[in-house]
Each structure stands twice: as C-alpha cells, then as structure tokens.
Image (cartoon, rainbow, N blue to C red; front, side, top):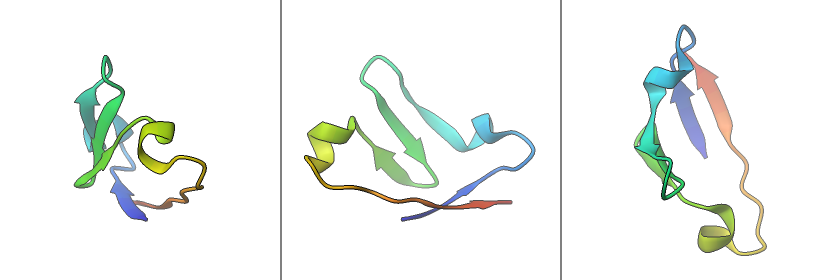
Length: 49
C-alpha cells in the first residue's frame, strides 16, 4: 500500500480514534491488525511530502 505523509509534521497526516485503534492515513483506514488481516502481512510504501 502506498501512503503519503507530511514530512514536516507527520501528525497532520494521521487522524483517527485511538480508543478503537482505527486510524485514517492518506485516505486509507487502518484497523487493529488481527481484526483486518488475520495472519497475513501488510507492507507500506511511505512517501514523505
């Protein structure tokens, strides 16, 4: 998965609900790993802008 982050302030690129462990990064919703992917791996291609 490709995602873009603000190189000056990464926190501007991430929103979400820490209580639910759900976060939105560059339009992609991230949930707790095991709830979403089971035993499969997920790799990120991070681009700093």
